Image (cartoon, rainbow over all chains, first blue to last red; front, side, top):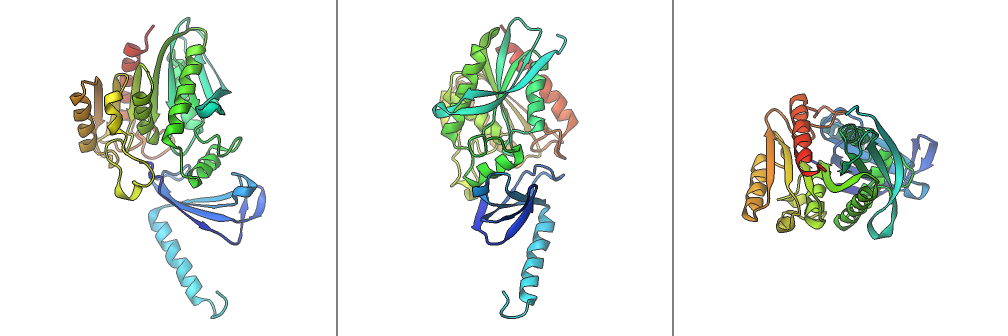
Length: 86
Length: 246
């Protein structure tokens, strides 16, 4: 089904899209049908900057297992960073 | 029928008088034809959905698919437009009805149109096809595995409401095509919908395919199920052949 469920957060940082690097303003996270991945549903992340237009987007569509592993890897990497840097 | 057709991107007047993009496919060799409004799935106004519109034209119908995400991202690629639309909360129900109404009006205005208009929608579009058929005067409607018609999961209740509450206003016969392995809607949910339609004396025909889940018509994804899709198309041709004929 189309879940519509979307979590959006403000974002700092940059992403590289089809037209090159751009500043990020928000990230949308949702679990729904993918456009390209060969799965019925995927954990999708859009790194966006709406002010630059809808094409200012870096998109990933991840299987649920990959998404969970990624979340753990992100948290582990941040935890392992030297104190004071994060 | 020689399946000759023409297809193009056009501008139509949608909800609120907005000019929106739409994809029109129509037969070249038909003196008289019915019209079909195609409602794309949430991932967008994409290549596979345009292929559906052309399939209708090859079978003798004028098909028009409004780009439901156009306002959020005019000119963007379908996937970027869908992402932009989602980030703004998705397609509002009222706006959807207005856009389908505009598409139906456009089809009725085509020289050769017999005035009979059907609607078909896939996935989220299945729910929207039901909503449109309860909100507008149409001649036939097809709901392909639309979720959240009867029940909306608690986690999604803030996004939209069930549309079964409009069932008494259903304006035309309804064909429902569902997968037995689908979780949204489940076979129990579609049976409940059938019961509601029975209670209002609304003509409907539901088919639930074993071995198929959600999105079994989607040719560019792993959910495609050839047996269900082939038979489903036959059901569509028979249904529209009955209700949209000249």
